Length: 340
Image (cartoon, rainbow, N blue to C red; front, side, top):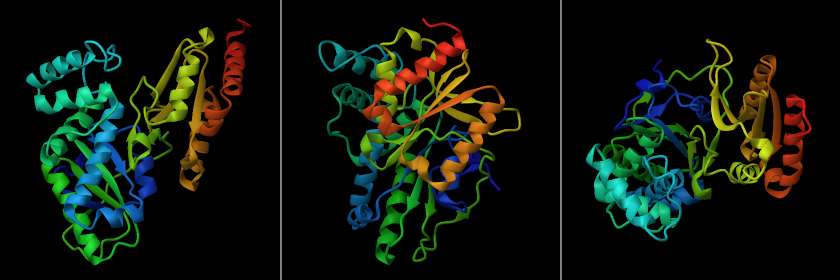
């Protein structure tokens, strides 16, 4: 079996692994692996997009673009302190982008446009699909400190022979133009016989998936250590509330924890290390059997190491933030032995 770091980039392969198991085993990203995103299109939407290769490519590029915009400024060194499109902001990020491109593999004009669009909150790109595919792949890889990127694509049920052919051709276009891995899971492609099958070696044991959809879309991507996930309204809302609370100091978002040397790493949504307090925000995907079981197993490992795990539903964070804050504060003050 191959590890995630050994899977090919620049081509399309089918993975001999269950889609849920694959998603659980790639966050935290394994050492040496590409930056791995997940693409899970809705069958009805895909049937519309897959009428032509160009339509499918346009759909995927929209999702990759949304992910890159949401991850800004992780991929642009020096841009963290620049807020909003007003004043000198656009000129500043454009200058940073051109400087970054001059010392690496990025295409300067594309990176500058992407930075300006991120600062402005979106908008269409003027560049052709070929430039966008290559540029977005580099940006997404750079967001995670990786040299390459890959997309784990879940093939939905119900694709006919013609749609399967268009689907695979679109994936091949993306892999070749972006020089990225396109790894397929899900429904079989029985009408297309040119996609080789490989079997990765998934990480064993529980992990802490901290993925979210970009802008409510179909592209999922892992969190970046030290920041709430930009695609998680629950994490963003909780951080905005905690930032106003003096008692919340010492928190760290999306940290990786290793229970013991032979265990799989665990991604923690929110951690107070000194107080040994972990806060998890569970979206609807945590109700699934595989993720529910993984959550329970990792909670036990954390508790055995002396950590308390406080779990809240994302809907609770979004609709009753005061109760969430009160419960976290009560626990932290108890651990600190103070009422302050």
